[in-house]
Length: 101
Image (cartoon, rainbow, N blue to C red; front, side, top):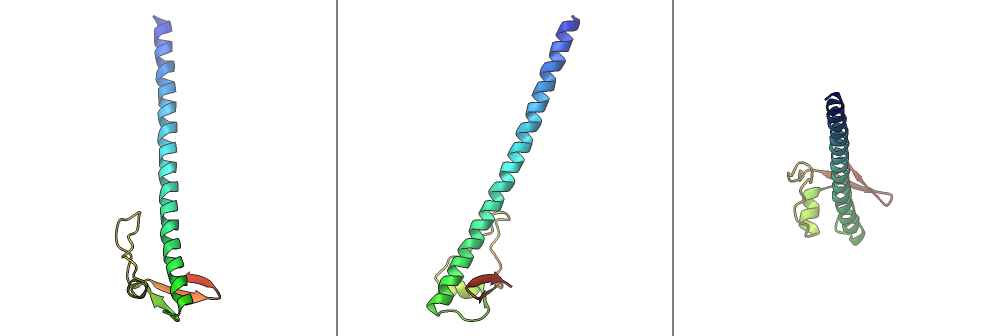
C-alpha cells in the first residue's frame, strides 16, 4: 500500500513540474510574439515615412495622419492593444534615420 502512495505522489509531482514548464514556455512564447508584432508595426511606419521623405512628399516633423493622407496608408492598429494608433504620433527624418518624437 505504501508503494502505491509513493508512486502516486511521484506521478503527481512529475505532472506538476510538466505543467509549470508548459505554462512558463507558453507565456514566454506569447511575449516574444507580441514583441515581434510591435517591431513589424514600427518597421512599417518607418519604411513608409522614409519613402515619403525620399519622394519629397514630407518635410520636417510630420504626424501619422500626414502619412495616412499622402502615402495612401491604411490606419494602423496596435497589435497588442487592438486599438488604432494616435493620428498625432510625431515622426521626424534626421540624417537618413526615422525617429519617433
